[in-house]
Amino acid sequence: MVLNQPVIRVLPAGTFYNWLKKRDKLGGQFKVPRLSNNRDYVDEILKVAQF
Image (cartoon, rainbow, N blue to C red; front, top):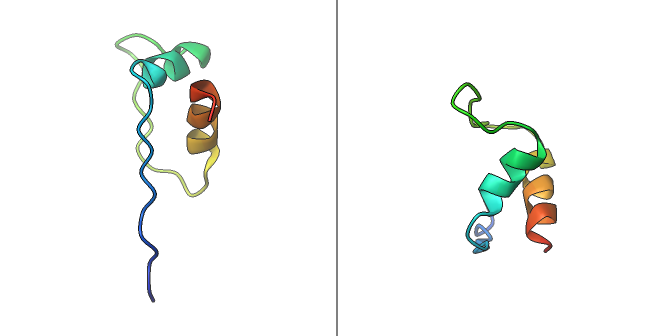
């Protein structure tokens, strides 16, 4: 199995914070999502960053 090179995108400062805010997940009681079997989180974050 051969993996492709990763694609790295630099996002504006505050993008992750804005994504958490949009999902109503700000605060100390919410955990940051670690892994996912699909691109749902990535697509949401890129949409917040307007890519």
